[in-house]
Image (tube, rainbow over all chains, first blue to last red; front, side):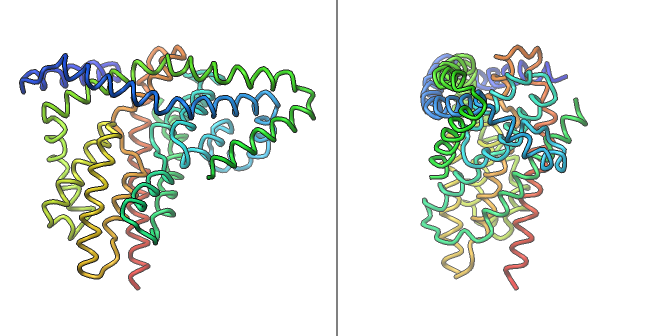
Length: 169
Length: 194
C-alpha cells in the first residue's frame, strides 16, 4: 500500500502542474536549486553533531548513558537507544536528524529501534526553535503556556512512536 | 546556548570515559570520522531533499498548495474560534498549515509569522491575551507532516527496501501529538482565564 503513495503523489503534482500550465522543468530546477541551499543550511550542524556523537559513542559513554536511562525507557516503552534522540529533538532539527540517522545505521533501518527513531523524527518538530522564532518576531515577552503545551505534544509524539511502530508494523 | 552546553559536555564526557575505559584511540578516530559520516549522509539524502523541493515548487506555482489550504478552513474555525472570523487571519493560517502538511518548512514560517502578527494585533486592540498566537505556535511545534521525505531518504540510504513504510506510524504519532498539543492549549487557556 505505502509503495503507491510516493509515485502517485509525484504523478499528481506533475499532472496538476501541467494542467495549470506550469513549466514543470523550470519550476523543478528552481526548487531543486533552493534544495541545495537547504542542504548547505543543515550541513554545519551535521558535522558538529556527528563528530560529537561518534566521539561519545566510541568512548563507551552511550552505553553508560543508556544504562542510566533504562528505567525511563522501560517506563515509556521506548527503545533505550532512542532516548537521547528524544531529549535532543526539541532543541535541534539537524542535530536530531544526525543522531537519528546514527541510531538507524547502528541498529539497522528496519529494526524496531531504527523505525522508532525514524517515526520520532517524522512526528515531532524543533519546539524551542519554533517558539523562539515566533516570540522574537512578535516581540512577545511572555509566551505563557506555549512551551509546556509544546513539550506535552513532543512527549506524546515520542511515546506514540513506540506504540505506533509496535501496532502498525 | 543549550547547544553550546550539549557539545561541550559531550566532548568532555567522551574524553573522561575514553580515559576510564582505555578507549582514547577509538575516541580519537571517531573525532575524525564523524565529519566524514556527515558528508556521506549529506550526499545520501541531499538528492531526495532537492527532489522534493523541486516538486514543492510545482505545487506552489500550480496553486495546489492554495487548494489544499482552502480545504483546511473548517479545521481553522474549530481551532482558532473568533480569530477565524478575520479573513486575513484565516488566509495566513491556512497557508501555514498547508505548507506544514506538505513539508514545505521554508514556506510555512513566513505565512505563520504573518498569521501570528495579525492575531497579535487583533487581540492587542481588544486588550486580550493572544491565545490564538499560542495555539498557532503549538500547532507549528507539533509537526503534522504527510510525507517525511528526509527521514525516508535516510532510511533508503541505509538500505531499507521500503523506506516509506513508516508512513502510517508517523501519521498516527503526529496526529496524537497535535491532538495533545491542542488539548494542552485549551486546558491551559481554561485555567488561565480564571
